[in-house]
Image 1: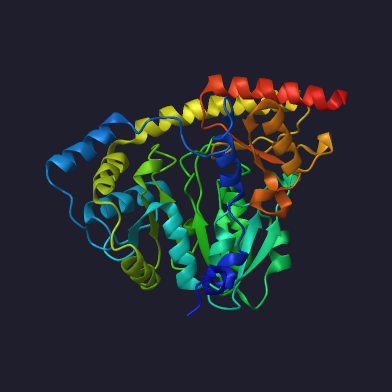
Image 2 (image 1 turned 135 degrees about the horizontal axis):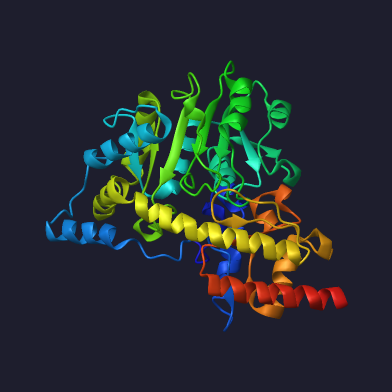
Length: 394
């Protein structure tokens, strides 16, 4: 046996070809620079509300440290079903149509693995969060990107969708409110998409992790349209709405036969989601509405402030109506997205995420998270302004 070990020959070519996350790249760099601040990570700056933490502490006191059902605690699933029915008027059976997962990320992963096989085409409106494409590629599927545009407020249009549908299309990803753009899809917008897909054999993965952070009024979901309950897997979670990122808890719901396949994957890979987190989530779903309202109002104030200030600086920024990101254009600087972010970090010790981390259509933009304190946002805007003045002089 050779003494030299070459790990490269043991690694999957598919995994080797997947680039690392463009978000984490800048997050890792900023940790190495003294005095640097980051607006790059989508993590609420609020602590998890105290009554939710108290519920977790009480669960520990009661000794609830065992595995739960693979599906998750039935009390939590019932609470989720009640919440979905209250918001969208659609009923789900908590016994076999709702699965509790390790964050929304696991839900996305197992949904794609359950639905997508070699050669299947997955329609992905971009810019989009970084996880969808690698998950499809690891399932040997093919991502077909649909470019959304700032002049359309980064919404998916029926015209753009029709251009990309083929007889190999298996799945459409809808991720609204959107990360990174902050775009939303209203009921009327989704109706146009429904009219395109209603008579086609296409499943939908609807990632609604930011559905509570909608600043336009009532949220909408594709499941509200006839026949779409069975053809849609909805992914959601507790990280964004309830400031519970570290609790690692999400969920998915959909047709019982398909959900049984998601649960099978979850069963082998995970067993069950964190028990203490599930008890905290029961408290969040049942009694956390006021917390959501308070945090949403704070985000909304930051959102309006950022959009106004960025436009005043000459960085054109459409008005995002969801999530907690703005996606201004930096094309006026003549720089690429990565150049802008690298030079800004070097010159002003401020980390943003380049738009091309979210797909080629994100080029010419940067993502700024306003899940940070107003004080930090003011400091960051001052640094952006100083940087723009410097490069415009040059």
